[in-house]
Image (cartoon, rainbow, N blue to C red; front, side):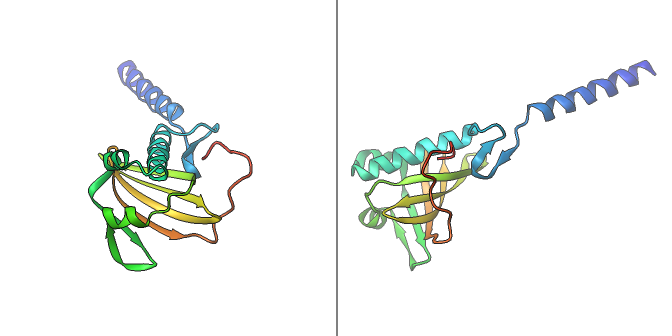
Length: 155
């Protein structure tokens, strides 16, 4: 009897410890308490690096981040654009990336965010494999809330 009680107590403590160490993640990938999750921080940095490389027209930096078989989709066009067609048309203006969320499954991650540029907001869904962007889908998001005037920590 004491052995079963000891096993039950150990199981209860293990379950409780696991629940206590897990952080609830809210919209925008923010953990309770306001700190970004590790995944959100990682992909926010990758997205910002890519955006800076695009703005600077740094072809070598873009080539490191964007897969050679990259595909771009938008509801504005029935055609899928490849990397070269996308690079010719991608805006090179400064972009604010906000409300980023990440869903990971092994090596592949799906990253979604709002991108504010030139007075317009786009909803973007990127598929990453490691540090390489495989595909992007994007559409205008006129119903999206406006970017906050002060940083909220979710940018």
